[in-house]
Amino acid sequence: MKVCAKAVLPSTWKTCLWLIKLTWAVSFTMLLLKWFGLLPVIAGAVEPLLRSFGLPGETALPLVSGYFVNVYSALAIISTLSLTTRQMTILGTMILCAHSMILETSVLKKTGTSAALMVAIRTAACIASGFILNLILPADMGAGKAATAAKGILPAKAMDMSLLWPMTREWLISSLKLTLMLVAIIFTLNILQRILTEFGIMDKISKVLSPLMTVFGLPRKTSFLWIVANIIGLGYGAAALIDEVERGALTKRDVLLVDTHVCTTHSNIEDLLLMTASGGVCWIMLFFRWGISMVNVWAIRLGEFCRAKLGASL
Image (cartoon, rainbow, N blue to C red; front, side, top):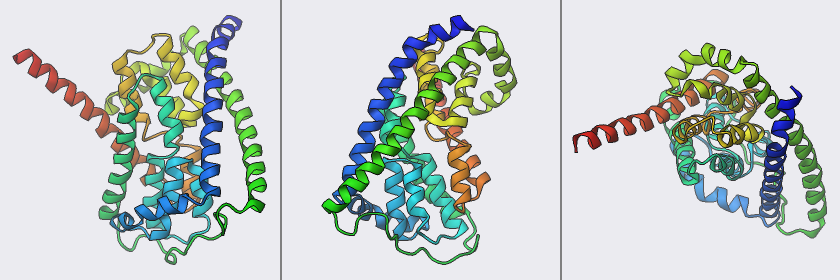
């Protein structure tokens, strides 16, 4: 166990530093966007599209905030709205498909997958979720008042100097807390992963999950990464993903398939429960995203099969 711990420390610390720098840079950029009052402008641009999702215009702000920042920023705005169960289920599914886009795309790119492909898959999944759920969910699903305008989310006056320090102070405190949490979780997870592999427990986990991996179209050896992504997400699970790739435990194809799956369906404990607590239907938000992920992975495998057949015929 000591050997396992020592083996992962150098690479884990390197990944931690990279992730911390990225997290601070992204969060500071979002702080500036809020202070300059640019987030409402971006939200206003996508507001007309929301009618196709059965959502009121006020949900543009949490959708855009979640897309660029994270689930928590979206929830802070959602808490000021009054949405029906139907609306919250649609909005929650869309946000869970595509959130923390800058940070999580950087993590997936670090594993060797195309950043443009991941952004395209997640954005398409977000939009498709809104359209499809709006079509299939009952119009009278849930109850509640129509959404009301978000209040108290952004400064009433952009670039108000009196608000700059309180916003900066809040950003510093939250960023420091997140940094400590990142370091603790990443080191613990990487050491645990190496120990499970060393003692052969990973093989047993893979065998148990083999039928599920087959349904999802994923290689059996990606079981642990699937568990990590689904339980704690891409941000905290970044080190585990990157470590598996750097050790050569996964092929480039394996990485593409597992990234295609987990990019739209991850953090299915904390984030999913938070959306459920906000009024969404848990099982719809979970199984719908699993379905989208499964379709995406099998689409890639079908493309590989067709190219192989075409190449053989030529």
